[in-house]
Amino acid sequence: MPLKVLVTGGAGFIGSNFVRFLAKNTDIEMLVYDKLTYAGRYENIADLVERKRISFVKGDICDEEMITRTMNSWRPDIVVNFAAETHVDRSINEPSPFIRTNILGIFTILEVLRKIDAGVLLHVSTDEVYGDLWGKEEKATENSILNPSSPYSASKASGDMLIKSYGRTYGLKYRIVRPCNNYGPYQHPEKLIPRTIIRLLHGRPAVVYGDGEQIRDWIFTEDTARAMLTVMERGKDGEVYNICSDMSATVKDIVEMILKIMGRDQRSIVYGKPRPGEDRRYAMECGKIKSLGWRPEVTLEEGLRKTVKWYLDNEWWWKAIVDERYVLAESPWG
Ligand SMILES: NC(=O)c1ccc[n+]([C@@H]2O[C@H](COP(=O)([O-])OP(=O)(O)OC[C@H]3O[C@@H](n4cnc5c(N)ncnc54)[C@H](O)[C@@H]3O)[C@@H](O)[C@H]2O)c1
Image 1 (spheres, rainbow, N blue to C red):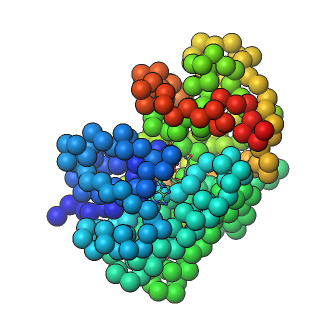
Image 2 (image 1 turned 90 degrees about the horizontal axis):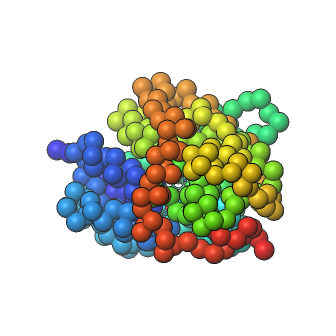
C-alpha cells in the first residue's frame, strides 16, 4: 500500500515543489490542505489535481473541526506541514497573522493529532529560529539554542517548541526539518530572488536592504524536497534535521549573479533602508541529514539559471501578483 500524506500548505512555494517532486518520483498518495492565502495558489498544483495524481481541500490549519474531518476521512500516515505566514517584511509591518497561523495553527494540528492519533507530523521550520550568528565562527547544530529576531522567526520557534512539548508530554510522533533559504520556481514575487528578476524585467534596478552583506545559505527547492523525502524514509521520530546546501553567499552576491545571468549592468543595484532587526548571518551544520545519505545536487549557479529561465518563461504566473509595496517599492517600510 502506498504511503498516504496530508500536505498542509502544499499550494505554496516549497510545498508545491515538494508535492511535484513526490508525484514524479514516488507512488505516495497526497492530499493538499491549504487556505490559499495571498501566497498560496491553486495554479501551483492544478495540473496534478486535474489528472487526479493528488487531491486538494481548501482549509485553514486553525480550523480544528475541518482538520479533524479531513484527517478522519483521509487517515494519513504522515502529516507534512508547510502552512505558515512566511514573509519577514510582512511580519514587521503586521505580526498578528504570523502569531495566528505559525503558533495557533500548529497548536490546532497538534491537538487534532493528539485526539485522533493520525500519523507522524513532519514539520517544516527554518534556519531563522537560530538567530544571528554574525561575528561567530560556529554554525548552528540541531541542539543550538533558539534565538529568533523577527516576529516571523519567533513564531516559527514557538511552533517548534510546542511540537517538542507534545512529543515529550503526550508521546506525539514528530520530525522537524529546518531548511536554509530556498529558491526556485513558484516562489512568490515578494521574495528576494523573484523580486530581483521581476524588478529587472520591469526596467527597475535591483534592491538590497542595507549593505547587502547579509550571509545566507541558498538551496534549490528540489534539493529540499529530496531532503524531506529522505527524512520521511530514513529519519527518526523525535528528531530535528537541519537542511543546508553549504552554498553560502551574501544577498549582494546573489543579486550580482542574477544581474550577470540576465545580462544587466552590474551596477544596477539600489541600497534600500536596512530591514529592522535583520540577522546578518545564518549558518548551519548539516552532518546529521547527510548521515542519512542525502546531499544537495544543484549548484547555486545552475539553480539560479533554472530559476531565472522559469520566471522568463512563466510571466502568466507572476504578472497578476506583483505587489507594489513588497516588489516594486524600494522599501516596504515607507
Ligand atoms: N522559503 C524559504 O526560503 C524557507 C526557508 C526555510 C523554511 N521555510 C518554511 O517552509 C514553509 C513553506 O514556506 P514557503 O516559502 O513555501 O511559503 P509560502 O508563503 O510560499 O507558502 C505558505 C503556504 O501556506 C498556506 N497557508 C498560510 N496560512 C495558512 C493557514 N492558516 N492554513 C492553511 N494554509 C495556510 C498558504 O496559502 C501557502 O500555500 C514555511 O513553514 C516556512 O516557514 C521557508
